Image 1 (cartoon, each protein chain N blue to C red):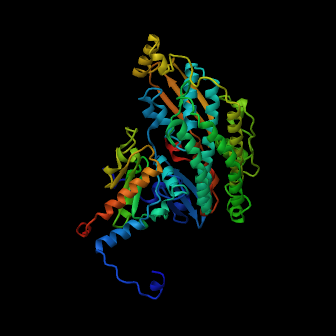
Image 2: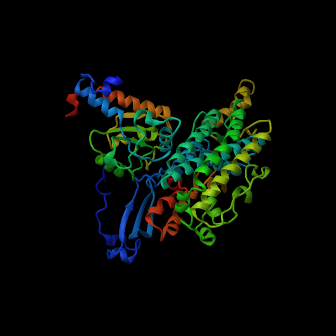
Image 3: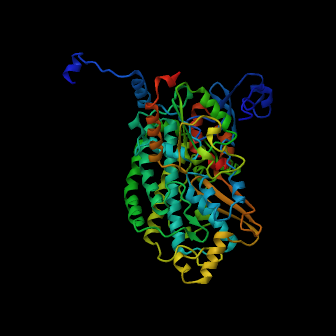
Length: 413
Length: 160
């Protein structure tokens, strides 16, 4: 490896001018490095902290340790091929990433999606939300010092992953959504498996709450910590549970419904204090609400196809290939050169477990996207981190990193 | 056993030194708590209740490289992360082993681009590669057992 030594910082403190306060330059406060290898930075986040004793004076995030070039790589792949990249972006929300990208393509091509596919998308996206919140709850509690919650959360998470594996063949990187619908219909075992989960899970959420909600140690570490006012949350561009924790009622599933979310009844939990504890309560309640949506979607799941009939964008089913010459031509064209959406640009947003996930897609009429950009909630929330962390004790920083629920793959892409 | 061992009469067990040392090394191999990307979530699943890595004496993940024996490179290694990874590896005390978990760490996976190191073996020596994107916990456990088997084959002459 070249440049290995170059990266070890040997400069003097004056180089940090502008990033840290004047007091740090004179040696009055201490500059401390945290990460990128740290057990509670949720991946490879690096923070430069300026400390006055134990109090955080300033905090500068250094990201890019997981920059994967996903947006650039997507430009060299055909629209359908690039779906695999979106899974690996926010790896706790693979179905949600598939969804926003497919919705963008569908908006660009004006492609219709059968209702059954829309319902299944909602169902799977909500299971993904539960899955993501379970990982969040487990690791957040682990950071603050409650070990056992992690073990319970991952036990339930396995059940969701089994369902994902059942429909797509993969536990995490499912790549199950396609422009115009889904890869294929769900198998027969799907419905009983989801019903089992719906019956089983509510009691488990109560278990987590019994462990944490009234636990005096948990209250001490979370109440009044990581405060973010509603004005600041809006000003910093926060969305999702971070924004709702401060009491702002903004959920894209309600405000700008997509993929038939307006067919479902659910509540949007709101916080009042804007601290870690409120955001914890919100995410717990969101799991219950997600379960409600899953139940409704399963009860009202319409029959019918799961992919659009528009053969210019969606390949014909295999059964047609033996009987229809036209189907063979479409099949050949789609798998050799892909489809060509009209020229234009679209922006589509969905509510990911972390907040507003947007996809900005520019097409120049070729089979490959000209530009794909993702507006990822983790990146925006990370820029709010210095504001939230200021003035807190360094011991509370791990709780604050946990409460904004960042995924570094989402922030760096 | 039972009463005789309580009386202190343990008998004598003869074993080759290398077998005893190799056995000890495989029974409590502490991995470094070091996740990079998606594979780290599967590594956490492997640690957690269903797959329970403590069956292999590996439940104790050490956040410090100074206390760890095994580095599981779980996820894509970016060019920015590569020097950090090498530094962590250098800080681990001998004997140390590396498992490259997942396609990205093993060969770059689907990310053949400017940002990703095309295989972590460009930076650190890898003992076992685990395929998959991400590998299932069973696959990681298989990789770990493969490493254990390999360590048990080590001869005293290799240690020098």
